[in-house]
Length: 181
Image (cartoon, rainbow, N blue to C red; front, side, top):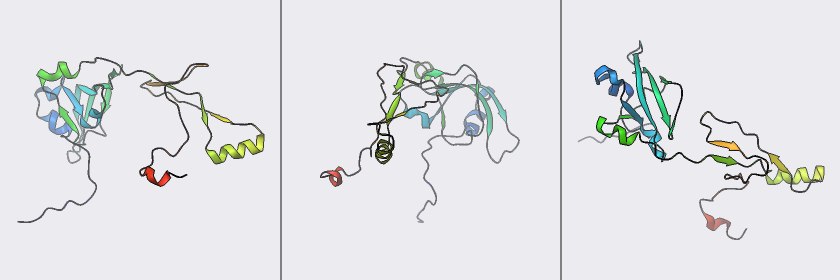
């Protein structure tokens, strides 16, 4: 009996490629719900509703061009999306027809995050600015670029933020090393 030894990176993917799933379905799965396992970590539902499937000329790379209606974290995008470059990843699974209605039910939307308008400078830079300008406790204005999902926004003047950006080392792996500092 021989021992199998895997070489290379370990993958977090669980499932099949879109080629394997949609190629075995009637009408290539148009109208069916496909889920990417990587997105199942979110509490809100994330899924794709297949609208159109096209084969790509090179069969060896196992990629397909799939036009889908994308729902990410409970938010359905207004325009159809195209999955092509990630279709070869073995990370998709098909939702059975009898479970589709339950899986796609969007119960609650995640609350909108409000990001603070300014934050502290890093300690050394803060000390340098205080010495150069004489301004005590200078603040760095936060420039926030809204994403297409619009889950976060910059706080209005006088509004209390729900997300505060703090300067620090984060949670140490071993707090015992920092006890007497």
